[in-house]
Length: 366
Image (cartoon, rainbow, N blue to C red; front, side, top):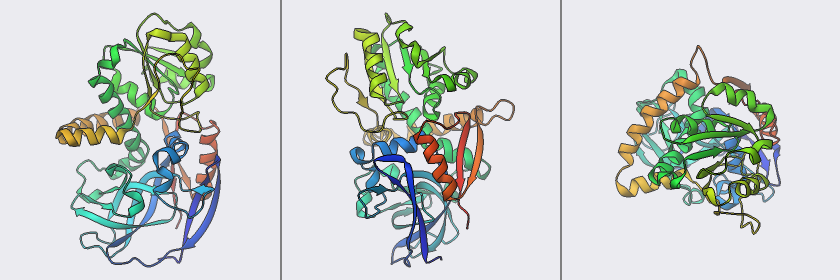
């Protein structure tokens, strides 16, 4: 095991600025497991993690010991390179929540054939889904050939799916039209795919640069640029599914739909850089932040989590197959090598300059 652990940290005041630094990598203590990160995805979802890092606690998941820089969480695959936890074998492959770093040492608990959790005290406040590591050998849905697609879409599609599940449970708050901002984002069109069987009209909002891509998906009934908001039909009950998180855009949407805006569901922040506070100039309903983990916790409390996951895994597989369909894929997956390349992808995502038609996966060089 290397004596140094490289970490790509993010400046909290500028989410596109990163710092590559190394720290000592100590030997694991009793009950600990060392995970060597192999591949992970980078999407606007990771920018949302950073934007909401203080409000929700993502910055605390992987402490840096610094106030100015944090470790932006990512989802990916790693290998167990050292273990002093019975039941977790060296060489095992896992999927889970990681910092952008060569290695992560976790305090393994709740060990089973399917995986284990990190018992580190600073991670306890996070919902269980962020602390669990799935052992691929015990995952009936794991397919090594789909690792890139899974790294990209598994953390996003669970948000898409649970958001639609939540809205469906509430009969879409009486809306007959769903307006989706940042419609080119993977979470947005994952939600659109889930909504395709519902009796609601889907209206996409996107930047001019991504409009052709969003139209090519054929996942929305209408595709409009942000300049077109004021010409959208406003007489129909409308729900705002907000993936952009842009406060100026939010005010325009609320002002245009007025009393016919039934609900504002804030899911992401591809264009915002902070958790929204109270806006005295906002017309209509207050935005309600949607947190996938809260939805899963509710299913757990009701005893419906197993049934939910049975539906979810079947639909997730169908969505993966659609996204990477060899004849007409929705995106092309591009592999980037090393943390320096990861820094470039982070900057592009933070600046809104990434290509919506590409999915970025980073492989770490050893």
